[in-house]
Length: 284
Image 1 (cartoon, rainbow, N blue to C red):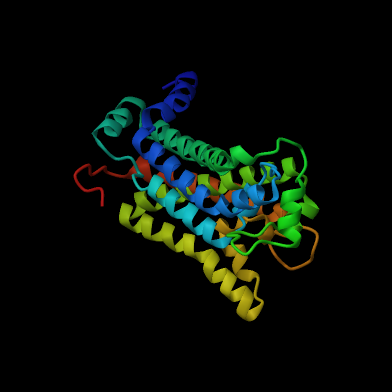
Image 2: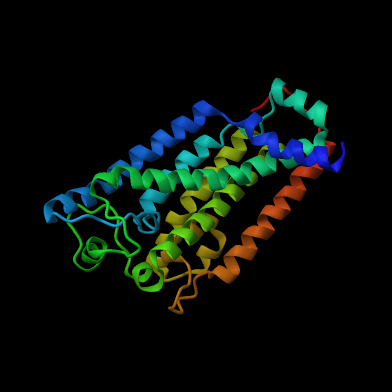
């Protein structure tokens, strides 16, 4: 396969691998999750007779329980890796092992950003009736930050309001979220190739609950070292180093680390697929 044909094959890979039913289910789950978490904000807007700016995602994703719920949905979406079925076996035979592996990695990284874009859209949809379209954080978010609301399910974080503009916060959240979700899928793909799909899902769930363990270490022992080993936590702007010196991972650590992790897993996948025998009858 020539270089041009190789690039065309990789570019078309998401079309072949796209699972419409799973994508629709994922979007519906995220929409339901967003509807529940934003309900107190909607009620507060109605009570105050004032609209809210649409930039709630960076605050909502910094909530531990929203993040845990989101990542459970991500594990569901990635549950069919490593895509070893009769259709994919034909594509491996036609394109070659290396091209197929690279196309899978490209698909998983692309889906990380696609899922993050979907999460951002689904966070906005429930707030559309009470949305104020502006480039500022807005009075409602500042009010909820300073005074709160009894029924509030996630906090409006002062650090985010203080350090980022709305567009910066949304951009960094989508960038980090896309990279983390892409790495998460590639890691599950790698583990599936070297062991089994069930082991990859178990590993995925361990990574999902790791932020909960890190939170407990922080609260009980004031130990921040665990955050360096919890990539899922890097999606939360409140758990990365901003202007305070708390010893948390900063962007200068997180971005190169994610790049290295994705690269190492990708090399491991290519090597494994080039040397493995596919067993289509046993995908567990």
